[in-house]
Length: 185
Image 1 (cartoon, rainbow, N blue to C red):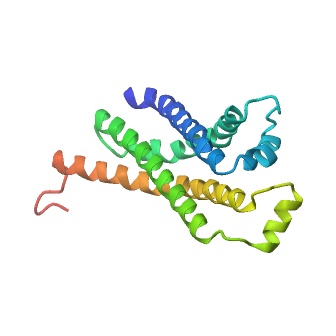
Image 2: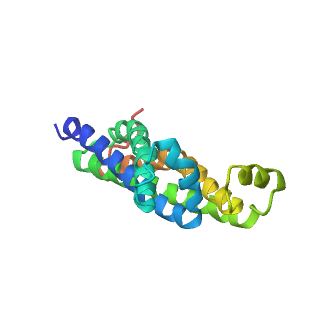
């Protein structure tokens, strides 16, 4: 009963967590390059010029990421069903969501770090961005790297979440002594 009721609740939670992550993520991104939003993302997401820029960045973050929670949830919630006890299932899925968020943050931060280390001047790309009225092309590219790395982190997070659920499954099996007895096959 808990499992069937929890599936829509977990999907909703995954969407809320992912959307909230996107909103906060975009506050960091906006701090690096406001132009990434004002000259690119606001048009892409139909954000009105009258909208305060930080609020606009949060709205873009929500719209760009809530669906990723549904995608992630569709992989992790059924995997959580491997865990036999209801309470173990609930904690395994919740823990897997934390693992996904942590993985996403870590990979995003790594992408940003690499962008700071390696995203020096690139005359061809910088020229193209300047033609698009971008005054700080390096900051723009760093923000783009952070965004791309975060999506990669979300995808890698699915595998890390699966590993977390598998670990919960194995721990519970050991605790409940579901291992085969000596001589049984």
